[in-house]
Each structure stands twice: as C-alpha cells, then as structure tokens.
Amino acid sequence: MDNAGVSMGKEDRLCRLCPRNCGVDRSRTVGFCGMTDEIRIARAALHMWEEPCISGNAGSGTVFFSGCTLRCVFCQNYGISTLRQGTGISAERLGEIFLELQAAGAWNINLVTPGHYVPQIIRALDMARRQGLGLPVVYNTSGYERVETLKALEGYVDIYLPDFKYVSAQLSGKYSGALDYFDVASAALAEMVRQVPAALFDAAEDGRMLKGVIVRHLLLPGCLMDSKKVVRYLYETYGDRIYISLMSQYTPLPHVAQKYPELNVKVKRKSYNKLVDYALELGVANAFIQEGEAAKESFIPDFDMAGAEPEPKPELD
Image (tube, rainbow, N blue to C red; front, top):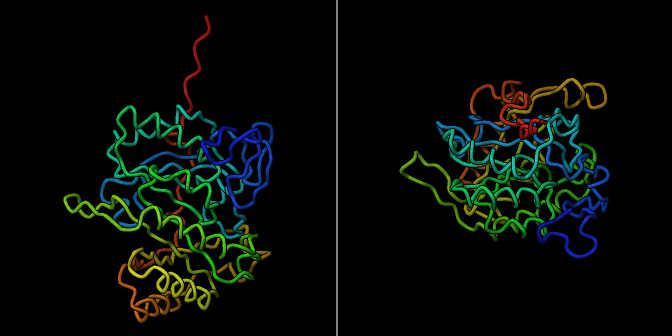
C-alpha cells in the first residue's frame, strides 16, 4: 500500500495508518478497520445536516467511507462502520466524485471516517485539484487518529471536524473498544489545531467556513458527568481557537438494546440543557447547539450508494 509519506520504506504494505497499528498487508486482507486497501464508499452526495457553516443552504459534498477504526457499540452509521456496506472505487474515480460534488454546488468536500484511506485520498485530491477542484476539504473523523497520518494531510485539509467522545477510559473501553481514546484523541486534536490554528469564514456566502476546527461531542445517555469533563478539557486547552458542537441527536438502534440496555434510551432534553448551561458557565462562546427533537433516524443518511457508482467497465469487442 502506497502510504503517501505515512509509512515509508520496504514495509509500505504493512498498514500503520491508525492508532490500532495492526500492521497487516491490506492489499491481501482486511485491517482492524475491516477494509482492504480498495477504497469503499457508501454515499457521495450533498448533505444538509452538518453544522450551518459546513452545510449552509447548498449542502456539504459528503463522501461516506466504509469501515472504521473504532468499535462504538452505539454507532449511528452502523451500516457502513460495522456492516461495511459500500461499493469499491479507485482513487481516480474518487477524484472524479470530488469534481462532481463541486459541480453540484457543494460548499466543501466532506470526508467522513476517512483515516484508513488517507494515502488514496491524497492521490484523489491531487488529481482533482489538477482538474480544477477548489473547495475546502473537511476531515470528518471519530477523533481516534494517528498523529503521523494527520501530518501527511497538512496542506490538504482546510477544516477538521473531529469527535471528542470521552475523557473516561472506562467509558471509551466499554463503548468503543479503545481504553486509550482520550490520550490518542488529545494528541490528534493538538495536531489538527497546529495545522489550522484559526478559523476563517466567507462572509459573502452566509458564513461558510473556509478554515477551522470544529470539535463535536455527542451526549450519551447517562454520561453527562463525562461530557462535562470533555467540554472543560476542550475549553481550558483551546479556548475560542476551536468551535465546540454539542449534539443531542443520539439515536438508540436495535442492535444495542440487549447488551447495553442503558444506551437503549434517548438523551433527556434536561440532561442536554445542563450540558449547554455548563459550557456557557465555563465561558464557551464559539459553540453550536441543537434545538428541538434531534434524535431521529432521519439524521442517519440512507447508505444507498448515491453518487458512488464505480467507473464503467470498458466494453468488450
């Protein structure tokens, strides 16, 4: 696997892209992410349900990649992260998709769960930019990223959109299979902010973000105390250099009910309001909050392969 500067030398094919460091040859088998080195996507289309400065009125040009390096039992994108729905495409086709999204009026190119495809994405962006791609690139991630891989993206990513899921190792181990989540995500976020230290908006286009870091945090049922610790860490570490997006849209899905009954409920509005109030009391000013009923399955996209069609096969004589 050509890791585009991420893992060099004779051991190129041994994948070290993510913190799992599984070291398998993904040209022959799947890694911890569940994917080979063939790009696999489940949807590429305009997406209206990101933060207002990302989606706007036109939509974010969102590419949903299959597979994931975490094992979140509550995953809202379960169909692609765990069931690995999707279709295989080449880096050349991915570059074409970026250009198609730009032609459709997208505000940006939004890469969802892309970390295990970074070398291929870099190639696709290089090709698309040579052909006129000029949109900001959004790196939409769980936050569980390897710093060395993120460094390879410097100059390619304009907006980092990571989750920051937990402070507690007990929670991250139980619900995401990653006892080291806080340490890994903290180091990853520091690298993201190093690369993009200040936000930039296009005032002429209704506040479209051109550069910046937005950190998302999804409140889970029964986890308000840890959520407060997340918000405190983010604000005390970065202040107003980043935006914090507090989400209440947790949707209990059928596969969690039996083993994790405590997660088989929606987040109470009262709990979410307490989290928002806590953020305001700390002094958080750059924040996105959700109003009304956000926990709806309509917020979970249909992974219908829209826009993900592979290259047409050449006709045989």
